[in-house]
Amino acid sequence: MSLKNYHINKDWTLFLDRDGVINEQILGDYVKKWSEFKFKNDVLPSIKKLSTLFGRIFIVTNQQGIGKGIMTVDDLNKIHNKMVEEIEKAGGRIDKIYFSPKLEKENSEMRKPNPGMAMKAKNDFPEIDFERSIMLGDSMSDMQFGKNAGMKTVLIQGKNKIYNISGLIDFRFKNIKEFVDAL
Ligand SMILES: [Mg+2]
Image 1 (cartoon, protein in one colour):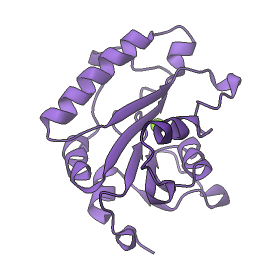
Image 2: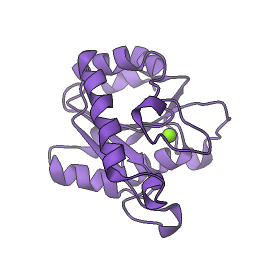
Image 3: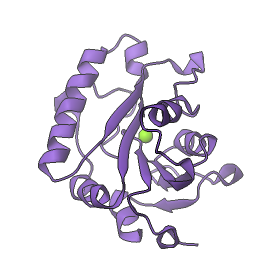
């Protein structure tokens, strides 16, 4: 089974994790301002290509730095406004960004791996079909989130080897460009 078998078209929705997929993750810290946000290699042209393929593209991101009081929703919105501006300048598109400010220990429905952000997207865009949706992320929490909502899952493999526990990972690639090339 390869991704090509799905014949991705405008009926499909792509859910993207942010940190470690779109931008470089800052280990042990949060991206608190635009100067700390670094796009990963090949992300901008890749999102441009993805925008021509998928009907809808969303970002779903846990941002517990807000819950911890390290940054504010306003700080996050400023970063996201700049990020979307750069993506659009490069010819790409993000239809909506969902973020969770909740702390991990709250085990909120709205924080990945729980599927609340996917349900919110479906509420906003009822045409979303989770069977025709892909969750692209770099952690098992992303894979669990995708499976909790009934999506296909794609892991972007970072430096740490991640094992395919309980078959949560449908496909894996080194980076977003490899994913685009496989569609
Ligand atoms: Mg991540």
